[in-house]
Structures are given as structure tokens and as C-alpha cells.
Length: 152
Ligand SMILES: Nc1ncnc2c1ncn2[C@@H]1O[C@H](COP(=O)(O)OP(=O)(O)OP(=O)(O)O)[C@@H](O)[C@H]1O
Ligand SMILES: [Mg+2]
Image 1 (cartoon, rainbow, N blue to C red):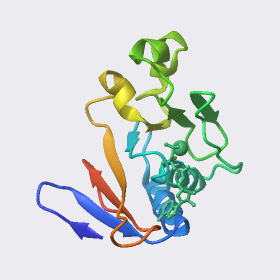
Image 2: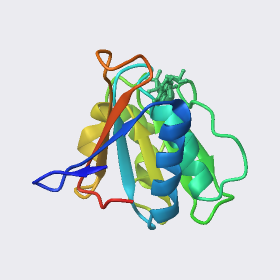
Image 3: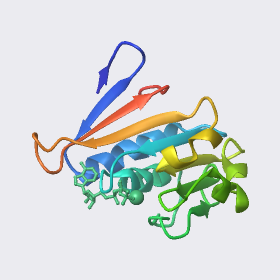
Image 4: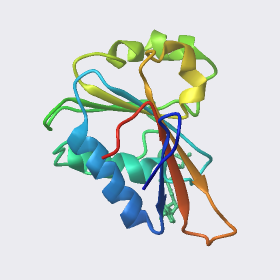
């Protein structure tokens, strides 16, 4: 973990398990109303992070990729958890049409994959988490940078 000037925090993980463990720590520290924007390319590790995050929140059921459902709710943990995947959305209006925006900044915690698609609906204090491959370092290495956040 590395704290940069400007409040950005950098992590580097070397396996899916490490990304999951990092997600768990964020899930343990999450507070009601928080929104986490998880950005990164296909296969960057957003869903792996989300699975750990849900574990940290105490969600007892496995979290799957919500790509085809847009939004998946998990009520069973310390806080209600909403996992969104905006990949297939054309625009923000599609999320609003299904009422998804109501979960952003509600009493639970939201984690949004492909947040760029719904950026206009995200609260000001959204925590941006960017996942990147570092192919020059190895196929399983990911750089995970967190803005607006606190180290966990
Ligand atoms: N350090 C790492 N952290 C996370 N995943 C890793 C890592 N190294 C390898 N992987 C692999 O990369 C893939 C990440 O898949 P995942 O579904 O989490 O990506 P995603 O960002 O959610 O993609 P999508 O945009 O398709 O939803 C998995 O197959 C995982 O095993
Ligand atoms: Mg995913």
C-alpha cells in the first residue's frame, strides 16, 4: 500500500485471492450510504473485488457477476448491499427506468461496475476504485488505486 499526495492510495495485488482480500477490507470498513465506483477493463478484477467486498459486509451468499441483471441486491449482511453492472446500459436513463438510482446513496452500500456509464447519477462523494492490469509485471498483477478513500 502506498499513500500518494492528493489522497490517492495505491495497492498492488498478485492474485485473485489478494484482490478479494482487499475487497473484504473495504467491505468491513464500509459505511451506510457509501457508493464505490469500480472502474477497469474487462477482466480487470472488478467482480473479484466485489465478491470480497460482500464477504466483508457479511453477505453469506456468493456474489455473481450482475452483467445480465444490471442490479443485484443482497440484504443479508451488516448493511444492505447493491451490486450494479452498467456495462450493457446505453445511458443513465435505463438505470433510472428500473429505479436503480434509488440505491445510490441510500441506506445501504452500492458498488458499481462500469460506473462511467452512469456517472451523472453517482453521488459527489463516490469512492473511485480503479483496477488495472500491469502486463509488464505479470498476467496476475493488478494495480488498484483508490481516490477519495481512506486506507483500509
Ligand atoms: N490480481 C488479480 N486480481 C483479480 N483478478 C485476477 C487477478 N489475477 C488474475 N485474475 C483473474 O482475472 C479475472 C477477473 O475477472 P472479473 O470477473 O473479476 O473481472 P471484471 O473486471 O469484473 O470483468 P467484467 O468487466 O467482465 O465484469 C478472473 O478470471 C481472475 O481469476
Ligand atoms: Mg465484472
